[in-house]
Image (cartoon, rainbow, N blue to C red; front, side, top):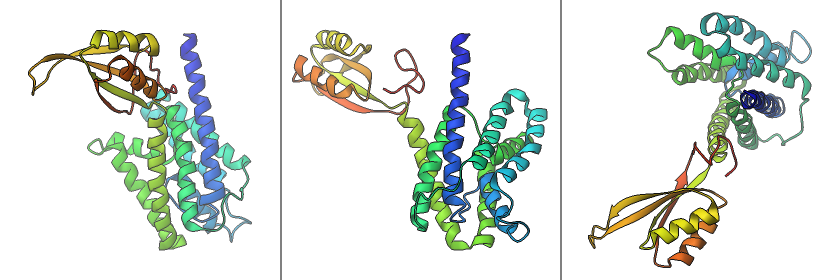
Length: 290
């Protein structure tokens, strides 16, 4: 019970950190460069620009983000339940708070390509933290989930692409085609960084070891690395000999030591090392650095 509560608190801390990082990207890069990358943040940038003649500086980003999310929260709770929406509510409120508190920072010069690249990197890291907390910031994610509740033949990802695409196209009419094209670059970078961030947190190495000294090899690796191994029956198709192939998953920091131990135990061993993008189980806890 205590571990579960600790995990819940950690999730909300991740969301808090992620929304803060996102706010830096939105206020200091995307809003500054008038770059619309979709989402309620992109819609907020458009609304701020359109209302600059009505009030000094236009309607603040934080206010638009909060106001747009309020009706979604009520719909989400009524349709999906409190359990589905509570982290989205927290994420949306946290993002609005950070947009209010964090001022525009002089991160990069007025260079559209740098803005797209570094804006995408910063945004990707922020979203990565939020995903680690298994949360969202509401917005178009919530819109897509609610639409998918009525249109089940489409996935949430497909609906999200259409909704965000519509916001990016709207940005074309407000800020021009060139900025929209740079926004597409930013979206691509954000996606890649988010994937890399999440996969990197759970990155490991797989080693397949074929050796005649499989018992000695297994004992050496288990004692030195404190990792389990699995023996897999194999047959050499050229020689026809029966062999035992050792299968082992180790942390990325341990792979060098593994190869040293293999060479020391059997210099003639045949070793294949490949990547494991995600490992869950004993010795590999979700999110731990390996």
